[in-house]
Length: 601
Image 1 (tube, one colour):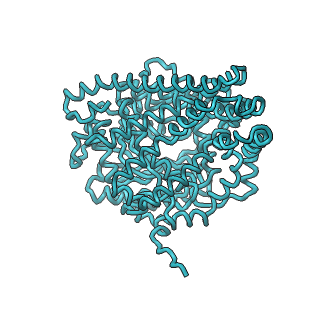
Image 2 (tube, helix red, strand yellow):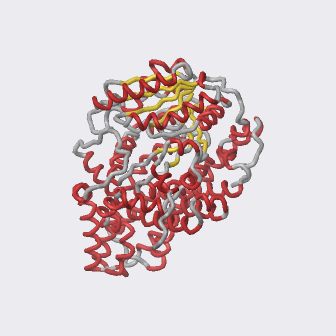
Image 3 (cartoon, one colour):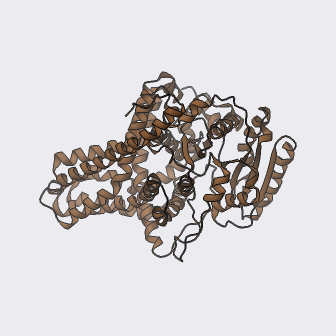
């Protein structure tokens, strides 16, 4: 598996790497398909206690639907871990062009920096982009960049603030770096339409565009790193940078992004190892080659009148596969210092954003059979659909297993030994990305210190594990309810995100999450009355549903968030040694983290 990791980056090696990419993909497909087949066999054996009936057959089918996302995540993470541990240059192993970039090459191309906003706090946007602007000017390369603030704001009060604040920003930097503010009067085609409007008006003036969201924070050093890499390879159409969460005082955000930080790099490195030139695009913190993007990546609205018709909400991955279809590579640069983002601060905000992604990903179906797509590109679209399609299967499993156990008893439902083995394997696959990263961190003293030390790291891992087990079924049931709503034409819109810490009133949590709670308590109640021994296993799916309301309220509490920061739970390396750009932003989490703890009386 690791025989090609350290090859020199020259033309001959690049040719060999292209050949080996086919072998990598074949190996990955064999690992995934073999694992799925083995797990289905084990599930069949486990369910064979007392013979098969229609309910058990349904359970097996639903289980099969859930497997692709879990199995693929496991193998991506294991491969990524092996590369991170045993390759002398893990980045070059998945992105060979970086070996040809020294880091001091002159910037010879022109880049438009696109900041897309909609009903956002203008002061926060200015705060986020100002350090980058100043450092580009200080580096003497500002003449190669032009900042565009592309607004889709439809709130009159916020629009007036934008005119004032962004106008002042432009005036402050006039003559040193070009800044343009433009506001559309509508949100046609959502963010993709916002960028398409830029492309039609100004795109021909630039070779590249760096896409940023309103909450993106990126250093000038990272901007130059991305531009130098894509500048060095004319075949590179999109270069996606890794994005990590900013230090936060929100309990929900800090626990969530701690888990993401553990799992994302190994997963991304592993997937990049075999996806190669068919990499991901996440819609922000990426550099795009504009000429092929303008020519080949325009997304026409989906035909029809149904809830999934019209303009595409989740545009990014479609643009990536269209760029690859046009003959240009899409690759990821999996370095953790290329930018930060703000994650939703409450469960309610997280659900709202997630359902927007769910609706957008469901619009991918017709594109899966689009002529000319690379096989890996088709796989990516299918995977992004399965990311949400598997949710109803998990909820169906909870209901079907509860019914089967209640009717047959726990002992008659599943064979104990294969059942426990299957349960353990699924848990390992779920947590593999985080477990492997924790192992990697524990082997490195500097990494342990950056997460607050071994004790804090392990306490944070334990907290995030419980959080993940509670959160996952809540999101699965939310997706399931959303799919039910689609049948009646219900859709979600595209609004601004509440980014400041705020409490979630109990009444609001009850209003939104009572169906989740009712299903969780119903399943646990049925098992308590018929097969109490099965309750510990059922908690894996039903526990989060039953506790969804207190989880929403507690993780939104500003007081709880401040306590977590003070004691170091969910600590990120940026809190231990804050980069200068984050100090410049005066983040509350950094101020709280650096405040001396009170001495005991």
